[in-house]
Image (cartoon, rainbow, N blue to C red; front, side):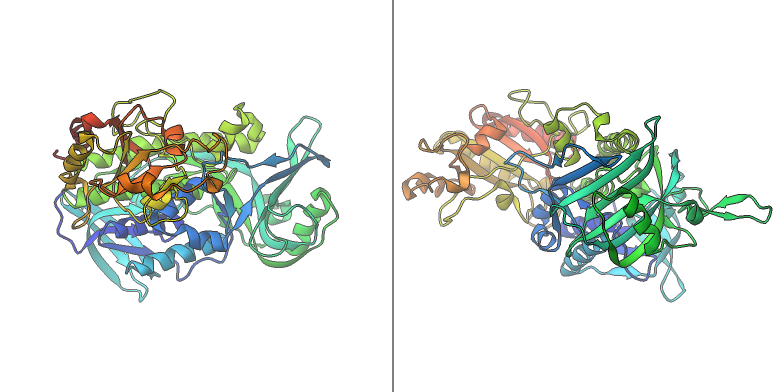
Length: 582
């Protein structure tokens, strides 16, 4: 894809999705502009849930630590139906998953991403609105209204719309946005509660009518701060209806714009603390006094998805592509994964390292995910999590967004090894128990890959002296075609088989003995950086069959899995899937 503009990608919308897209593109060395029509971040705790998969992505970027210091853990949910406590839901994940579930107000998430992006030399252009755009074979011409009120014409290689449910990019591209709106309006507020409930647990309390339908609802999600919660509940009629001139009721506070999409904050009347307190008095598990309301609003919910995630050089992500109930905190996290999926592909194409056909894989991989999330959250909003009869482990992994795979996508290469092992298209799992010379603590795979914006190749070795190792390293050294910045290509590392006999299979790897210098000596002379699988956890999770190679995509998904002796052929197959010359 030839290009000449100084701006290679124009991103519209500086919420978590737009900021994530900008950060990933900037990490790949892409010249970007990020504009947002709002003069400042909104002070509302809208999207508050952060999934473990998102934290893994931010770890790869080097952002996870800042988020963890600002967020609070979510350990589970306390559920009540008609005042009767139900079995507690604990959010438990397998021990190899490095992060748990977290909560952070959206404005704090945006602040941290904005600071990270500033460190990469990019600032948000606030008060700047997209008015129109047109694309041709060589780029996109966008017309902006700037903060000063003037107009600016911008020539860019590609345009990405992360501008929310009422997206100007989606409308300008002529994408359909099929779905509907829930008939109910909700109240949202940020308050403190004086109850003595377990720390780190959200609360869901409902009242069911005789026919089983929910006619009253209270959901409380912990926020940073003592006894602070983001609460949501059904809005009373006085906030959602007002008399019209003919005496009939007319809806208000529906979050709808002129496009008819009823989704988001809105309304002419804001809920008062007394109205929030009235619902809490009815549904809270214990008498509770609310205080210190920081903000409140009326909120409407729709469920919609576009017919395609882009066309030509223009793309949509996040709420611009899919909106749905906030059940399970899936929306923002799904949008962030949209952004990361698209960013590395744009970077390769703009650098001339991949053909433009690679960009069609964005829709092929992400729209099925969006469709599944919309359908699942609509079911859960109506029937609860029990609407999906999966076993608890599968349910939890899906909610954590750890089961997303692209096995049926156009980039998935042929599977290799056990069918139930991680295969091309799957998430590349983390693992711990890695050791290396000069390091006196156990490392995780995320530690090894942190800061790497491009592709990584993991070479699992059963014998460091195997001549196939040097041959594989030489073949990978020549594969600079899939780099997105000068001197950047494949990052290759070796994981060397070396179980410690004294370690029990299920013992915590953090307590296992460190390898001796003799155990690590074979790593020093490897042609690529090497790490010892000291606890055997990499072998247990990845289940290699002898010497095996794994290509990890920039978005943390597996691109290929192959016997080490076939490195050259496997690399050629993967590059062909990307439309990259081998």
